Length: 382
Ligand code: PMP
Ligand code: GLN
Image: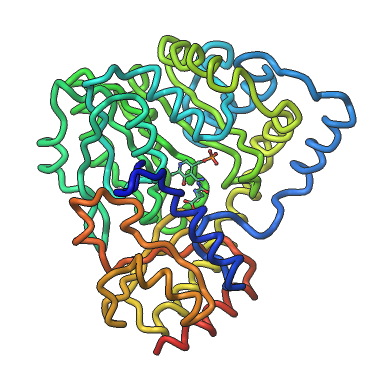
């Protein structure tokens, strides 16, 4: 987390969003939607505030939200769980990740992630005192090599941290990869923590929760959040599900992180999780159309693409534009074309930067006219 001069580094999202504000560029850096989610979800939060749902909720979250989470896992994935013991409401997926890592590892253990990795993973593993190992995901399909994965897991591995669908690449791991992860976790007595915040933003693939695979449940903690699914990233309301012993350990740590979170947002999340299937499919179809608008604009501007199967990010290779340092390019891009993206190296440890040095991540969770304007602006790069 420290820069070479000893100062603390701002996250890439803070740096690039500030640059967007300063230059008036279209911000396709930080991933957050520019539209509100379903009216029923917003209305439930408003009503909850009016009804006085404004004090500390129960430690594990309101029972009705825990029930809605369990019902959602059953409806979409056939997973059965006890809402009283197997579900914990958290302050976004971020707190679920933090509490899981802090609860389950000791200094000296290893946490394995895929690389590139969502930036918080590096920070959280660092805070826990564990060692961070990674398996590289390579352009253009960003699927892990199975031999690399076998080599990276050992008896020192305490957590295999999976992010599927994956940020920043939009990759969706195939069933064989997920099964190998479960097999390796068994062989080396590791716990799987799986971050599935993009579970519903999926286009050309189906979401397979790790916890639904044979033999996975008893050693898997699944983390998700309503931020992406219901366009409520600012509400920071998420959840962890898994076997009672793991959820109980994570709950213990959560008590000392936030204690509880977001009372009026909890009934609103329950409303969202109970929306009909058509909402979830419609939201994905709309995002897929947005993906395709931005993809066309990026291709037209000269980028090569790895078209994502999920998430709201596209990774674009700028090497045909002469780019060899995407971080430098991203600092110049607002001035060159009035658009902000983030360099994929922000999700990669320094020793691996070379393989990702021409890659830029762009978010497409923006209104269609905004993406069309971004596409127009990007054509200035040609
Ligand atoms: N995990 C991944 C992979 C993400 O992209 C994000 C981004 N928002 C988070 C976790 C954090 O989710 P939340 O805002 O619910 O904490
Ligand atoms: N998950 C979002 C992204 O990857 C936002 C992250 C953040 O603001 N910390 O862009």
